[in-house]
Image (cartoon, rainbow over all chains, first blue to last red; front, side, top):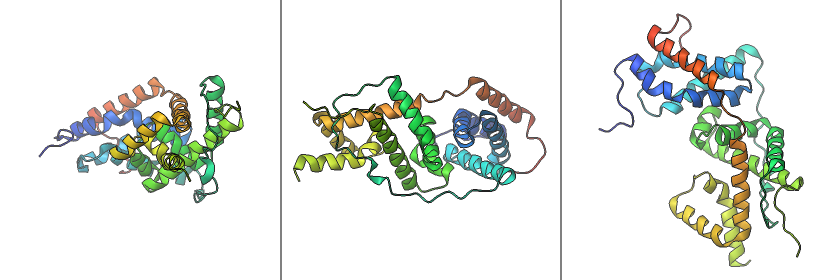
Length: 184
Length: 87
């Protein structure tokens, strides 16, 4: 039977096969979760340690999802130790209509103003939206992997992502950076 | 409602999933065809692509942090985990 990755024989081999190739992704995700480089590094070290201890029990299926689950649990433990858990707001649906495309864009100019506006709008997003965008658009996770790390259904990842980008789109329009319909 | 507008609405609904490569082949083909001839939706798609590109450039992973973590992993693999709480 064909396996996606070769079967590892020892703990070291398993660690090299399943864990080491994912270090950079783990760091990027940790950076998005913690917002701090130093915290991200600590979190990934903790994750690597936990992964090393349990890699001999790992079945080799979906190593990234397995590692993201470990990272998520490690992050939860850190939170429990460091500060009280804040309840995440339920996803609001008030901005579902954000993706209004009634205005017909005429041309698109991507320049510093555009990038600056995207940056400001990204920073202004509610935490749960900003994290989701960071995981998918900055860290390059799939919807499914982002769902693992956020511990929410894939549909929630998708709706948060779409609403968040629509908010950024709106901010571009509000600042006059996004393309607008021109009157002839 | 005109047929063209109906199609624009359908495309708008799946546009972001399409740009993320998360729609099936048939849907992707239909959206791509629509974006070819509908200038308004085509430019909307370009805007969302540009947002994604701007975000992707947002931050580069520091090489030194990743190499420190690789060394840590190498050390774990050769020396084993230090005694402590189990994961």
